[in-house]
Image 1 (spheres, rainbow, N blue to C red):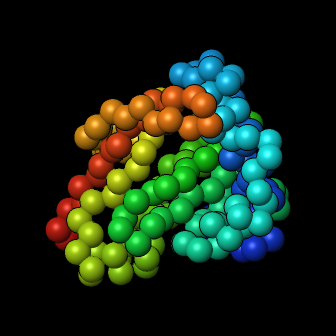
Image 2: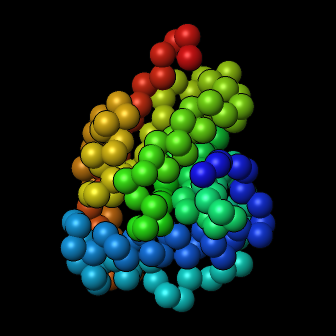
Length: 162
């Protein structure tokens, strides 16, 4: 496995990883209806590609297949971190998070006064982020396409000498 910068050719693969990962969470904190609302079948592929290309995004690749991805918003928010269900438990998400922490984009954000990473973790993702030092700062119920999904605003304070 290796991590590389997202390229426009990765749009369909990252969308597929997202949908499979979210749908796999049904039964692990969310109902099938909640998972379908979160990752609908009719997601606009052009909008997805534009969103992925609008921010620093990294993909985990194994044998030319995208198995995970993450991104970073300018204010230090990890908006997406998803791993294909068949690749979970193999350190893919940890490698992606390490990439974010070592990125020039985060270093630039630090220069602009960003002192923490944040994320809105799903129920099944919360333990991963806690293992990596994130703490819950708020529990939220988010309405989405007729469903309500629980997530957790989490924060990782970055050391001053980071």
